[in-house]
Image (cartoon, rainbow, N blue to C red; front, side, top):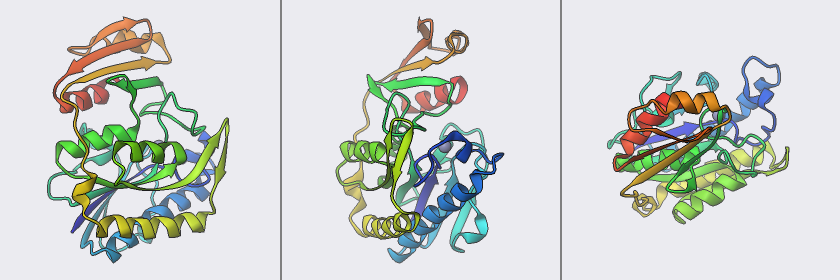
Length: 265
Ligand SMILES: [Zn+2]
């Protein structure tokens, strides 16, 4: 059983300020360790459930955050960005049994995490078919493209609720709740315990129940904080400027959505 784990940091217990997510800051080390601990816990849960091979994608910022020596030996760690449009689930394909998301966070436009964003922080919001697109939604459609179900999500309370709406069979562990510019967090050790147990449970269940329905048509709207970014992005083939800060793009092929996001965000 081959498992894919994609990990971010803004949905790890404790992270509250951008300084804590940036490797150039002293604050970062504590949260780098917690991100690593939550990933290790998910690997242990997967191994207990019978995983024989685990790929971990470090999917935050520089993608050079997770402390490799703490991971189990069965893990292959993907660091940095290849430039492939699959982005946070690079190299995911049909050979994987399931996807696990650790440290994921609410999208741009949400108030459920002070660090809420979608992709680049230069974006005010991304909408697909008139719904706020979180990084979870973007990866759920990507995984659906290669027919691999997402079975577990940990992160802030907002993203866990979204996962449950996407498919109630997806197991979640909410490690924090955002209140304005603050967070209410569970204990780091408790987060680790809950993640290990829930990933184990999620992978012992019939994962086919976690598949999601792919829309047949994608209407994408990207709103930038800076109007000049929208002006430039509107030159992407098929995109058009809808308002000074907003572009629109429509397609039936989700891969084209990922290609768009690679070049205009
Ligand atoms: Zn991140």
